[in-house]
Length: 135
Image (cartoon, rainbow, N blue to C red; front, side):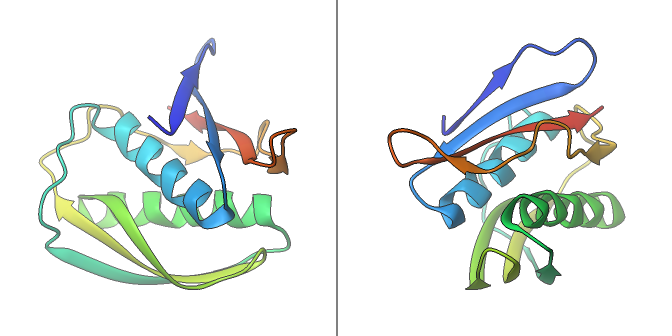
C-alpha cells in the first residue's frame, strides 16, 4: 500500500509517500477511497468528471484536490479511485477523476483537514505528507 494509517484519537490519520507529486496525489486519493470503502475492488469506471483546482501551494493543492473529490463523491454518490492529470503544477491542476456508483460509504468523511498536512521531501528524496480526515 502506498499509504499507511497512523493512530489518531477521533479522526483518520494517514501517511503518504511517493517519488513524485502526481503519484503522491494519486496515492492520497486511493487512501481516501480506502477510508470510504475499505474493501473496494477496482471496477470499470462508469463516470468521468473534470475538475480544476488552483491553490497557493502544493500542500493546499492536495487538500483542495481531495476536498473536491470528496464533494463529488457525496454529490454523485460515487467513489473515485483513479485520476488522470491533464495539467499539473505545484499550484494548479486539471484532472479527470474516474468513479463508480456506490450504495453507501462504510466511513463517512466529513472533511479533509489541513491539520498536519505539509508536503516535503524526505532524506530519500521522496515526497511525503500526513493527512487527517475528519470522520
